[in-house]
Length: 263
Image (cartoon, rainbow, N blue to C red; front, top):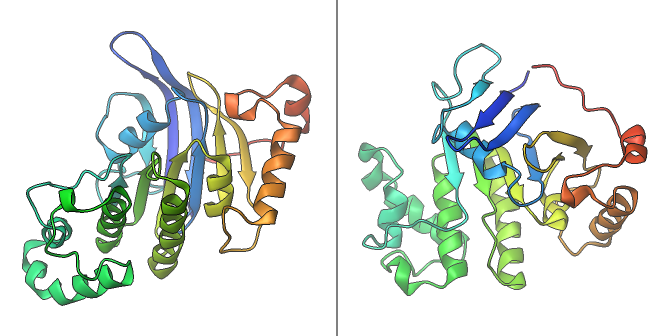
């Protein structure tokens, strides 16, 4: 049974700009889904709607039971920036997302978690004393310690250099394997999507809809520089040369696997 069903007929901003139209897909429990599309295609808008940060739309975001998505599930969000509170220590930033009664009880466990992600001596430091990569590690750990049902990730590794970004992808895979939350990852990086995801939804240009629903049939875990990832990357773009522009030409459409969805 699906964990989440999306059926957005239209999302229009007050200025009349239509960001999303006829967007439908479902996500299974424990599934890691990447969303890839051109800039301005409505990917961040979609995450904001799912998270409940924006509720203005014509459509529905629901559980199969019919409950609204915002009623029950535990949702964590990792944004493009770490968004740590600069006046709180690393430890306090992590404690902030825990229920108040559990904060003292969890302090020893948080120290162990910080050590497990290479931040053993950083609990008392403030975000401004950390590098960009270290801040992202804290943000990633903060997202997982609440044990979310759904983790929304909006290009969380952008602006990082390649070694730091790769280390964080490996850490993400390790943390995800522990509790297997459902993940929706927005990225412009096709190789990153192929490295991390079970399935990739390719979006059209604005107003966005799904133009290709692609299952990643590669063994896990896998690295972004693996030969199998690069080969699949190259073959996808050879078959659909305008895919990252949000376009499939008529010949590509005839050859694509139909996007079937039961919402």
